[in-house]
Image (cartoon, rainbow, N blue to C red; front, top):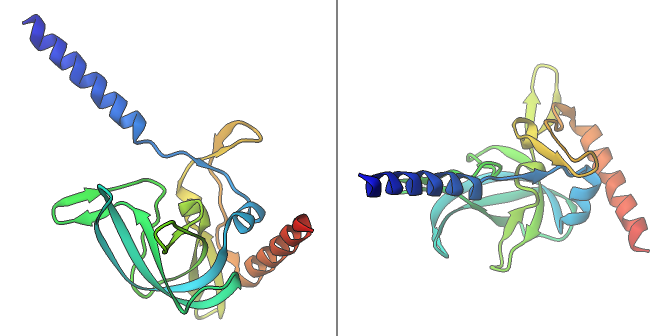
Length: 187
């Protein structure tokens, strides 16, 4: 009887430890910080994605066609690697790791990986989905981090907040200004 209780307590402890170890915390990053931390900033269209095992984890590899480059030199097609995905009956969900569907467009802040492909800087922080309002003839961007609670190191608080439905021309202007400020820092 006592041994059974010890196993239950041990099992519960491992369950809670596993949940804590698997938590994702994203630090709030401004457009300036995202721009500085990224080797490339592109407008890209998702072509396809595939999940598979690599290095003992499930990864999703998404192929993008680059529509526009705001920073960096990238090929016409880039492969983005993000942890999580579905392989067979196993589904690995990592909060904060964006997922993409074929045909959708987004602005991505990209960093190269050691494997020769790319990852999204700050995951949902560096993903800005494009929406088109055809009747009004306007395009807006919304940052994926809108549904994620972020840690702000300046205030040492967790808070929600992200770019939502920002006019495309305003987003591009702010990124261009961030690039200029970052260039000024390097001089």
